[in-house]
Length: 380
Image (cartoon, rainbow, N blue to C red):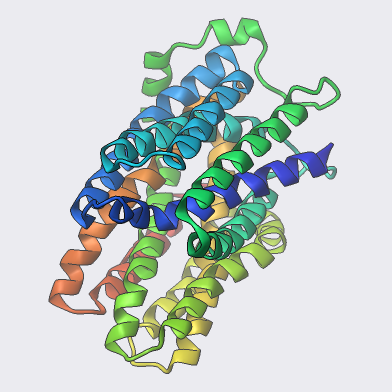
């Protein structure tokens, strides 16, 4: 049954990244402005961040399987309706519908995946992240080609693929032969949202992981979002910039599993500090006026290091979460990504107005803070 799960994860991220990078083109194709696009993007990210924590709690309370299916149906409807609409004022609520569905689907599916183990009893999360990376790499390529044919075809096919992924997830997680160690109903009935939130606030180790993950995610966002602008300043071709951006995801996808297996064999503090120090090298090199080829290498290095810290922090958060409250704990953890997606463009725009490479400097400082906190606050 595992191939079914692998395929479900890949198709889900493929469908998402066929559509999301090109959403601005849907808005402008129907006469909308970039200001409208930016507003709806920020609102969508804010909505998802709010929804995810409570959906995580509901995953613990009522079970994640049917929440996952319901969220997938909402997102599928959003994609399909965008594919047939002719008015930009319908595009905006439909895009919000997609993101509300994602806000339900992602934390519930991730809760189920956090219980999943490999055949050797290891965490499934590195495999999940690697498959995610493959979808992130291929999705924009497929979406770009489809957009050249018709943006409506891209949205409609995205919706169809989203539904296929939900069917595959359902086949896997509703199969009684699949062992997923969700809390039993007795344990679920005892879960209280307010008490769980208080427990999270008092869990020092989990809060440290949240801070470290925030630094990792922000440092990635600052580099990734500013690279095209820096490339223009340095007279890089768009091909070079695209290759550099792809280098991150390629290295992330290829090496997540072996790197995280190696990191699991050493102390957490040592693993975090060593990868943080390695991540600092390409971040500092990007501050220099290095040739295009070395920029590509640096982005690959960031995929290996910051990408691995992204996965390792996720594994730590899952391990730190109580078994009967994983959904709520990981729901809070997963709010970080949509929140950074909201604030990162603002930070990048402000820093670049001062100096084109200031976002790189900020990313390097965040990595340095990550190393300092890891050396002092992480247990084990």
